[in-house]
Image 1: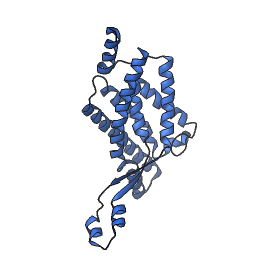
Image 2: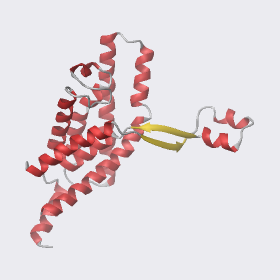
Image 3: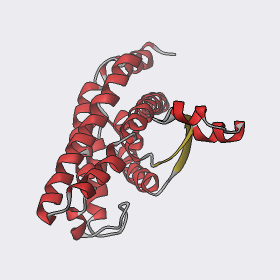
Image 4: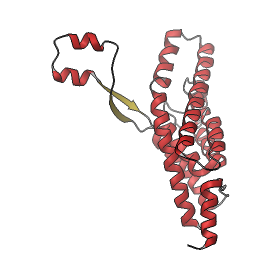
Length: 225
């Protein structure tokens, strides 16, 4: 490996070498929009052990091993849209990451590519705030990803980014609920379904998304050198 190439790789890896506007980056941006759309309609079933509030009461009863096994296994339907967003910002950086989201939002306001459809009226849906929150989340994540990124830093970025999306998404949801005079129990139900245990999954898988995005970016950089 020549010293020039080695210097470029080190600069990319440790100093966050910015990606320039080329046909390749524009193609990657378009593919990123496609990835977000695919992730929006992809549902993964996750199973893991958990301990409900009635754990001791349940075990005190006459239950079989089969019932115990299924009582303490939680199934969750997960949509990996947010991890894909962080994969994109780790791959393309802040500028092209935000461009990808703007293109996704622009298309969604005319075509049914959001989770519950699309069109201009979608701006008044409860979940639209989560989509808008992708933009500041990418801004913060893209800024923090500049420079050397170790595992701790990537984990902190995933926490900050995911919380940004969920906090702003909840605030937008409350705003729309106020406009609609929606009952509080409905609002709480929406918040629970969108920002309950989902937050923990988002943080974990966003960390993986950031890591894979950085590795993919490094690989692409080596190929282009």
